[in-house]
Structures are given as structure tokens and as C-alpha cells.
Length: 327
Ligand SMILES: NC(=O)c1ccc[n+]([C@@H]2O[C@H](COP(=O)([O-])OP(=O)(O)OC[C@H]3O[C@@H](n4cnc5c(N)ncnc54)[C@H](O)[C@@H]3O)[C@@H](O)[C@H]2O)c1
Image (tube, rainbow, N blue to C red):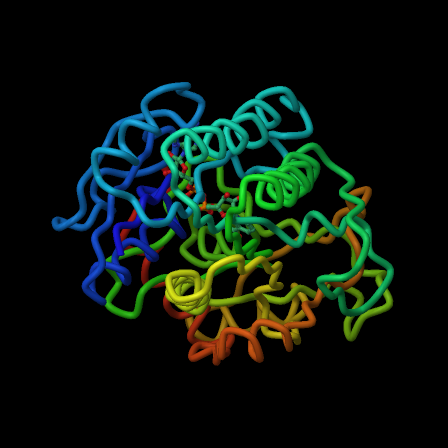
């Protein structure tokens, strides 16, 4: 397959690009390096420096490279930043997605895989969310993805595209050989702060609330290793290559989770030192638990996670962080 990977120099996009190339596919990474890294590019990928908001360039790249399928990762990803700069998020994420779809229609590319998020479900009161649940995001980041999803739905229907929307839960970890991992300067994921604190680069970890109705009062999340997310993309792409008019939305999570304190204790075991933390008030809108129902992707794409292991997630994340700086 000739695969155009927008955002392929970022955390998840780089894993997918590497794994696609290792399976013999051709990858064209399209990225503006806003948070992506040159060193994450596979030596065998073709790289195009470009913005997903560019009205002409994506179609040219699609035509010149006879692209079969577009995987659209490029986005701004910080919920905290989105709360203060909503327009940047709608422009980059929603308009960016619209523009990529327009360029696909213009150049006749018919297959699309989209990076969505559990944030589209919003402040869910259910322990588990499934793909049929109503989308009710509660911040501009989640809304920028939910509105993109709705647009994909109509565009795919009307223009005859095949599309797979993958809603990732809490992506974490790094490659086992310590060559790829997260290095986003505005990252605000739990594992970023956990590893920084474990390495003594941050004084303590802030935990938002310990009075949730969970095992120890702290929030519970479905942490998924980035390699399992990458593999879901490979399976989705290979499915799209053999089936036309295939349209599905899949949750990408393990279907079980850990509390923030459980993750902290595992990180302490792996790091061999205690991690200081401070309990501060809950953040508005943070649900007690967000866990995926993931039977659908297992059944449809035959996805069997290989790294459903909190210790591996902690160890790879820590090894990676020890090798890198946070900026
Ligand atoms: N990391 C997670 O836990 C998580 C969870 C759910 C969904 N997602 C989604 O997965 C995707 C990838 O996230 P990530 O964690 O790898 O983030 P990242 O910041 O590491 O990667 C994003 C990439 O997109 C590029 N990019 C951003 N805006 C661009 C633009 N306008 N034009 C061209 N390139 C642009 C960046 O340079 C970067 O290489 C995003 O769509 C994100 O919303 C991530």
C-alpha cells in the first residue's frame, strides 16, 4: 500500500509509519513539525514538509505518490491548551480534517483512517463506553474530534469513501527497543508527569482528587500501549485494502483500567524509588472511570493486544523518558 500518514513525525504516527514500512508498505509522512520530530522519521519513508490546512499540497502529494490510503493523525492534542485556545483546535483539527477530506475527494483517494479519542464521549457516567454511545464532549479538543467524526460520516457516505475511525483511550509507553516514544513539548498525559517525577525532574505528581467512587478514590483510566494502537491501524488499513464501502468506528482500549495511584505504585516498582505526590482538588469534567468496550475491534479486525501489561507500559515509558529530555 502507498500510505499517506499525516502527523507521521509525532508520537503515534511515527510508530504506525515504522510498523507499516517494516511490513513492506510505502509511507509518505506529511507533517509540519509543530510537535513532531525529524528523528522519528523512518529512513525509508518519504517526507513532505506540509500543513494539513494547506488547500493544494495534500492533493498534489496524494496524486504524485498514487496514495491508496490516508491515515490522519495530525492534530493538536492537549486538552489543557484547547481550553485556552479553542479556535486553534477547531482550525487545526476540524478544519484540518475537512481540508484533508477535500483533498482526498479532489485526488480520488477513497480510504481514510482517522485518529479520534475517548474524549468524544465526554463526562460519561458509565463504567464502560461503547461505540454506539452518544458523543457529548466537554472540551474544545473533544469537540474538534467529535465534529470531525460527524463530517467524516457524511463525506464518506456521499463521496463513497471507506473509513475507519479509531477512538483511542489513554495511549502510553514506548517501543521495547527504546527507539520511539513520546516527545511532545506540550504533552500533559499522566505518564509524562509520572516519568518526569520518577526521574526527579519534577518535584511531585499532582493527583486531581481522591474521592471518586473507585478502588482507591483516584480516577481510573484504560491505559493502552502505543504498539497495540499501532497494530490496530495496520489491521484497519489492510482491511480497507480488501473491502470497499467499509465504514466503522472502533474503540481502542483494553476494556479494563488502573487508577492513578495504581499506575503510580507500578511506576515506583519499576523505577525502584518512591514517587512523591500531592492530592489536589478534582478537575471539573474529569470522570471517575473511562473504560472502553473493545469487543467490536477484536471481532471485526481480529485485534489481539500484545502489550496489555501495566509493568511494560511503565518500564518502556520510563526507559524512554530517561533517554530524552522533556522539550
Ligand atoms: N496520545 C494520546 O493519548 C491520544 C489519545 C487519543 C487520540 N490521540 C490522537 O492521536 C493523534 C496523534 O497524537 P500524538 O499523541 O501522536 O500527538 P503528537 O503531537 O505527538 O503528533 C501530532 C503530529 O501531527 C503534526 N501536526 C500537528 N498539526 C499539524 C498540521 N496542521 N499540519 C501538519 N502536521 C501537523 C505534529 O507535528 C506531530 O508530528 C492525534 O490526532 C490525537 O488527537 C492521541
